[in-house]
Image (cartoon, rainbow, N blue to C red; front, top):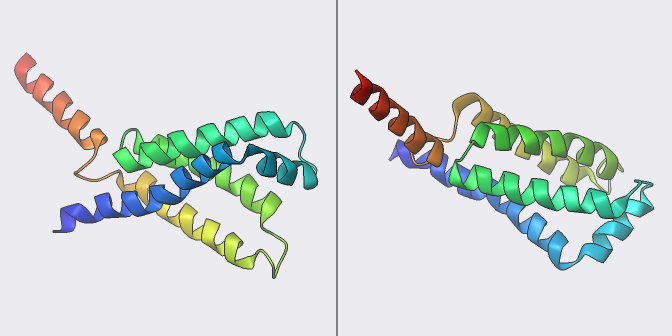
Length: 135
């Protein structure tokens, strides 16, 4: 049963990133306006980068494919996003701490990997099999 916990954690953790990326695709104008309202330059370019990071990073975590890199990229996104958009306390306090919790989950993936039920684990098995065949 323990071997399924990383899979469940990845599904739950990735959902917010994938959903957020899709929401930005479906309503780009609101997101661009919000970015511009806090003084960010080039909101169209930043929106495209945000969508790419959220969706690619989210699916990396979900599938467990290059999960450590996906987690690192998402942390690299969350740190500035949290500092720019979620430091207006008390209004943004919950979002601020939610992002800290997300970073905690992502750091767990960096530290411990994606788990047994992941593309990374499957690729690792494939490499081990190839090594045995070569011997």
